[in-house]
Length: 65
Image (cartoon, rainbow, N blue to C red; front, side, top):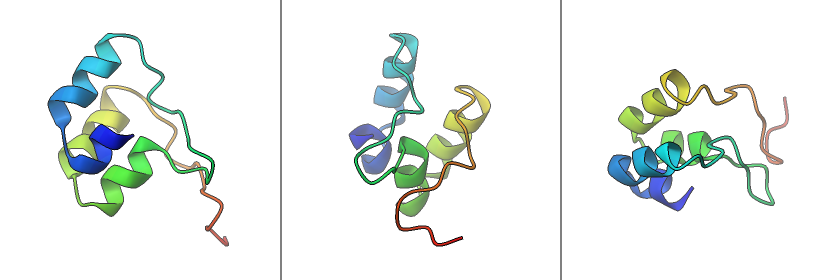
């Protein structure tokens, strides 16, 4: 999640290749997808969605919908 938040696509790619579950979430329910989107790292968002198949409807604990 740190790599996604910082915009490090190479690190995200390597973690995925090593078998990391790219859909993991933190104690607030935030995922790498949440963090990449919030920081404007759209190439990472696209990679997580298209290549990793992460669930895009996951809600964090601050979502009120």
